[in-house]
Length: 269
Image (cartoon, rainbow, N blue to C red; front, side, top):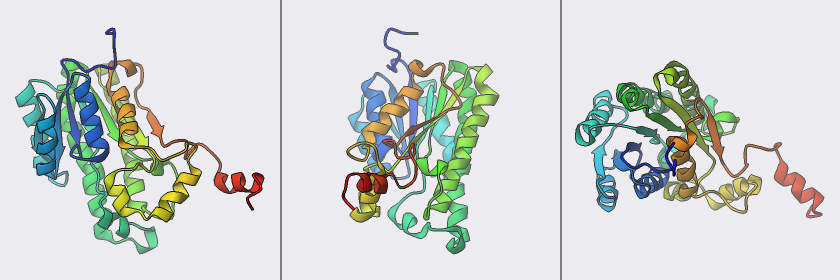
């Protein structure tokens, strides 16, 4: 292990959904630690803008609903850099319009369910499948962004949360099948994170509900999740594989209704 195993000198990382939020924060962090980054996103203008800020970075248009686009992302990265060390599957179908439609199963539109799985699960699988031969060559690794909602039941986001649960199992499957071949695979599970998209999609009153159940003073920022993802992708985590690192400020760690109990015992009732 190198003197600073958290660095990425000489390594190449693909960040999907890299143009904003958690993806952009991760791209910046890996670049700052010496890595070369491919910023892959369906919003190519934003991806190109970020790539222009990072030394040696490239931008790639990515449509996870397209098998050809997803496979081309891997091929383009390897052709440009000559190798691939890290695949961070961070992109997901999670715009404000999608979040508003993604409720409970009784009221679920089949088209929304199918598209969510096409992007989140099928797209992630295709990216992993295309990347694995290259990751084997350099003993690289995969980090999948999932969600603490993949570990809990909720009133909303049935499609999103169940798709992320499927990715957790995919993470374990890849870790099991490719560990002896030198490839690690882990997942980072954020809670509600203060990205621009979240600020747009969730009213302040709903954010307050989550904040009250968070054990920190505030919700996490994209940079908090980037630190966790970069750790898993680095040699510092060389003995970690098949794991889910929950990075939600403790929201998933306690009994339901903790905020209400806190209020009761503090005399606020």
